[in-house]
Image (cartoon, rainbow, N blue to C red; front, side, top):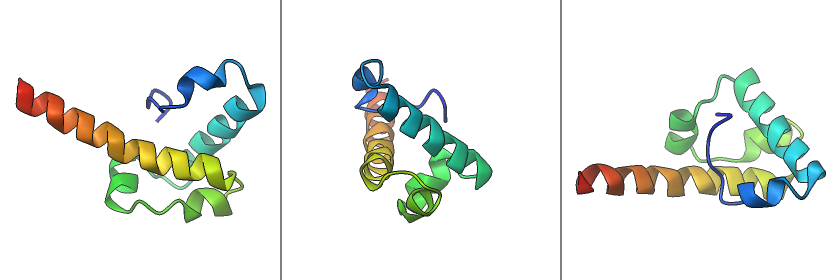
Length: 79
């Protein structure tokens, strides 16, 4: 989860508050035993929001997982 590449990762170094929000999201995912595969199967950001993660961050994370899976599949078919 900590190494999951988000599309907004380049912004994190410039915004400590946003970086902290992503770290909180990672903590919520770990606390709820949610890995990327489970989130991909059930892409509902509500568990993150209920865990105190800002709605926008939660939506980005869930959306980014779908993009990440698509890239992995595309890479796998190209090999």
